[in-house]
Image (cartoon, rainbow, N blue to C red; front, side, top):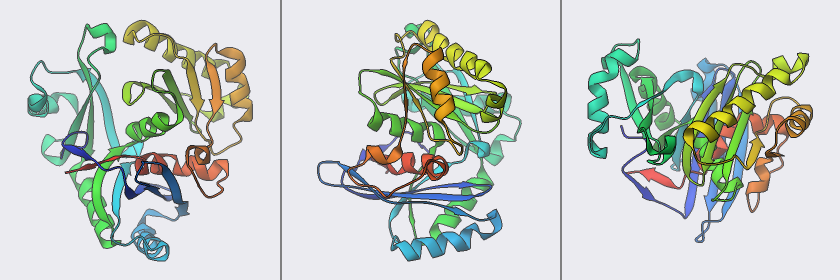
Length: 305
């Protein structure tokens, strides 16, 4: 399955997005008018164990009147591998085939038991000196289970996405196209920072620190964020990061945002997801944190053919 290729534009209409996690699932539904203006119609996190998610999803879809709607499933980060590697020097249409032969050397699983796709970085990344790509790998049985889950809930699978691309969609709506924009997400024990310019995603970097570390001060988090920005500016070579968006967290993010503003030279803003839409329900920061990837997935303007 090609997750990032063979797509067509679909600007009008609605798109459901789902993210399944160990605590429950997030659902978002975005509608666009003929001009592409987005409205967040539904956004909620349904807390339930994995064993009850199929039943709860079917009930939620029915109650919201979403049966038959297309859905973009955003994979939870814990369910897939995300690897940066040299892109094979072959035409675009042959990249996946070339990596198929290398797969056994890149992952621990049997290649027969996984599905994968490739997200190539823009040609000007790394100052054009190296062609790089991200490899996304997920267990085949997990992919099949998601398809069954969606079908039995009455939705039509339109696309499968990853968290990093969902964040890209959020950044595309929240920032100016010509700006190097960083998005920072902090969980309890880890985080991730992405940098994009318009719709082009240039960097994804994991941070081995989260909000728990902030209890002892923000120095280590600031250091990791600064290292990420320095790497982007020196190695990716696309210029200075002009803006950093702190994405919603499950705890009050005020202290973190203040520390970032003091410690970094880039403009620091906290993101309220509802501000991105012409209309949206009221959502507290905790709910936004749980639904962040689902909202980004629902902002996708392309459907797999």
